[in-house]
Length: 237
Image (cartoon, rainbow, N blue to C red; front, side, top):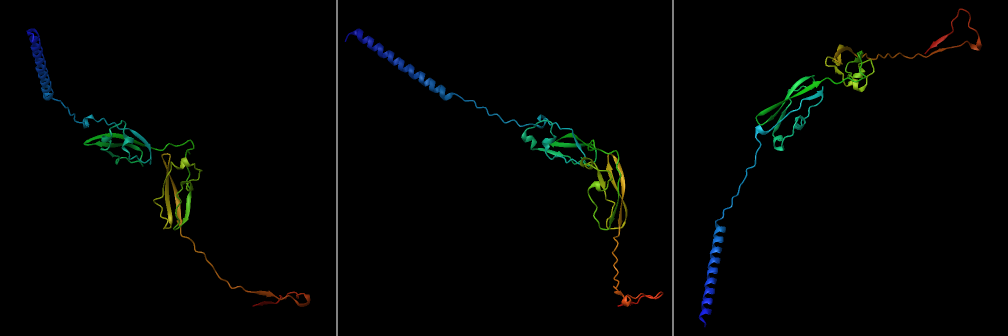
């Protein structure tokens, strides 16, 4: 074989070996890099609301006398709160007297912190049909008779439903089981009116049996006139 051709062949083989060795080194290097690579995993903890982060604002409410108070806490909140906070709120309206006009405080507690709101209880609004004054009746009943509950039975003036709704009647001093004279009151338009209820014993019905007498009068015979001064004959059976 020609020497020149052998040199080229050897050089080619040498070059091929170098390429193979280089490829192997690069592969091993890449593999080693992949094996030694580290992955960073970050686990974040869920944020829990702190007491200081909760912003609870309460409403100042105004209601009329004898209006029932709501038991829903959301009706007292002036701002939205997360559900987990809402579930832990406690409402206290025990100091509010809905039967008496006035200004009262109520509280909402979240964990150990208390928030305070105001409830104003006011008199019921009087309609345009309101009366300037009323006149009460004197009621007479027998012992054991139940008293009527409709306030219009005690007032002389005609009353509309909205006016009756603003009246408060007090019959607590009347004893229907004992004869006597008692007073009752009706509160209307910031005034108190007093009336009288008289309880009397029922009178028994007296019955007297009187024998029936059949009385017949005998007329004169033959249509003869009765002599002057003589009484006709009367027979009593």
